Length: 121
Image 1 (spheres, rainbow, N blue to C red):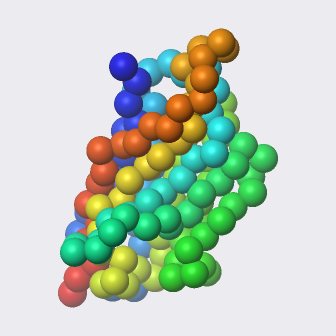
Image 2 (cartoon, rainbow, N blue to C red):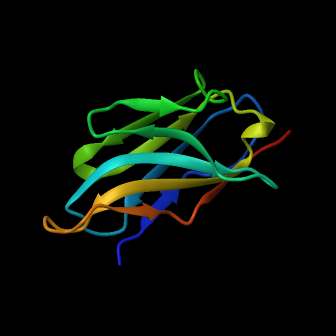
């Protein structure tokens, strides 16, 4: 069973940066829209940023100008560069991707297990 594996979370001070990455644990045939979501403490999960195969990006208003999503298509990997972090960015960050495991497979949504990002002085 293929899983999405996130890395790069941690505890940082306000104003600093982190870079998250997400990649599948095994072979997949193709990936389509991929993105990052987050679940702040006591709140619902929300979209942070997403990116299509052709590079079209969408960002939450709260992270525009501070976060940058990117991807490497042939590796089915995405990144989230987070700059000027704020305490309100504290959350569990989840990777999500639309994936086909084989050429004749249907496109399905996959989620990672999440990585904790804590911004605190």
